[in-house]
Length: 389
Image (cartoon, rainbow, N blue to C red):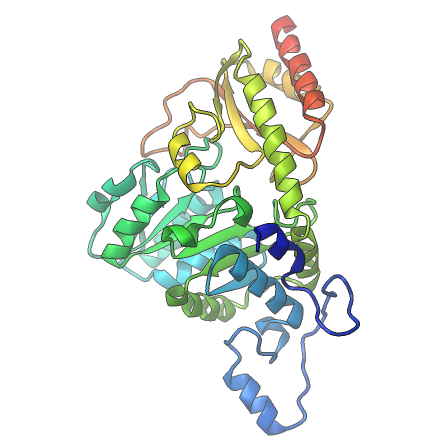
């Protein structure tokens, strides 16, 4: 069956009479008919699908987790409270004092914060590397290297790393690989099929799709899943019943939403590539984007989030360009129905290699707006830049 079939039918109630959507399940305490039943549930509490106590999961929790595991081709999934939590909880089971982990230079900014603020106090060494290193990552491995953390495409700059090559090197060395797959979603990329061990998502974005949910999801292969589930539960981490419900509901329309995001994003990106103030467009589907050939090989499509680099501008001119846009909101996150714009500065954090371009990076999230209307809005913004005194 196609992934769109799975998006519509997985994780839904069964029975002769049933609701269309999996209901919100609010439960902390479950009651048992006998002590023997309680003890059996307690003994199996770490197994997905076992009802024991609300923190370990409810029926709706297990429905979402099983659905995500199937969509990503994993052994199991754990739902947690945010995308950042998904990243940190994916890393934690595979680090200990004295170990070394490799972090792609292009990862989500708060991942760096976790490494510097938390892992450093655990005496874990985090080394950043060029995400385009490919199989040459073998030269960075140490005997104490325990994990490699990636994002595809890169946060803000959208280069596409060679996941297959990196995974092959890591698998041979016994090093766990973790990738943030939020941008592509399972509709366009399934990293575990490429040899990665763990795929994480900020379900806050495309999966739920309406900018009203905070949820993270960790899908892992059989070798890693049990360690992740046990570690996550030891931290007391769990997504809320409402977030579970909204994410299940959002997934039903993910396929058609991604098609619209993709088509509109490419249309706007191609238009931007021909504007005189634009130096380059950082969109994996465009030939000039670093890793474009890898994107063509491994991905089934493109999301609607990308960046462009325009000529340097003063802060007042930049504010005038952005503030007067009518269809683009200014805000964090992305992946909802609305279109967003945000200036990006990676110069202070990109260390391997350092970011050397001096243009202004602008990140766009193309929502479900008419792309021609978005282009008209941006064109008016460029006209204001030309007229800005």
